[in-house]
Amino acid sequence: MREAYKIWHGYLVHFPKVSRYTLGVKVDSLFTDCLEYSLQARYASGEIKNIHINKLVVSFDSLKFFLQVLWDLKILDNSKYSYLSQHLADIGKMIGGWQKYVKKETPPN
Image (cartoon, rainbow, N blue to C red):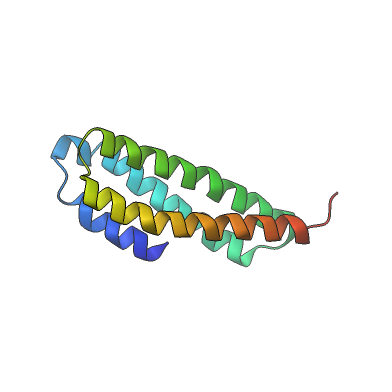
């Protein structure tokens, strides 16, 4: 996730001002939320871990959505969007696997 954020951060500085301070800030915030939730989940246990992972999943899906909006608006060009999307696809698989594992390991109430 950190590597994807570094890539994103390199792109953000080249956005037009109006987009940098609206959608750019939104995407940046979602990236940092994802980083925070993954860190919290890493150190949590039991049902609390599951809660943090669920927050991570929602933030990650929102992140992908808003990146697609940036691409739709031609603020993020095809090559940059594609490169970042490849990283995010791999991260999404890892998050999904982590979520399934935690659900399987967490006993029901």
